[in-house]
Image (cartoon, rainbow, N blue to C red):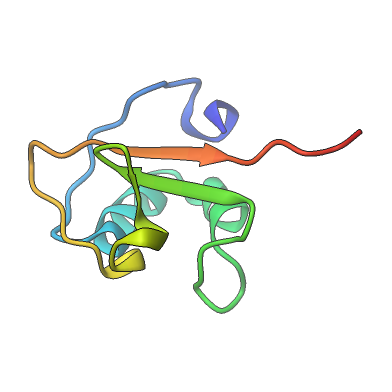
Length: 81
């Protein structure tokens, strides 16, 4: 995914929820949006997002609250054979 964010490994984003943080990310790097979100605005199945090591699917999904000190990790699944 670094290709879509100018090869950066860390990016500071703003938002009170994961969804708002992703909106901020995609506002600055629009080409990444289609790789993490589907046409209905839902997180793609092969994309995992973690807030402080907790998968958001086990929390409140995209509505998971985040604080300034939280770390959001975007990790695409790897598959194939």
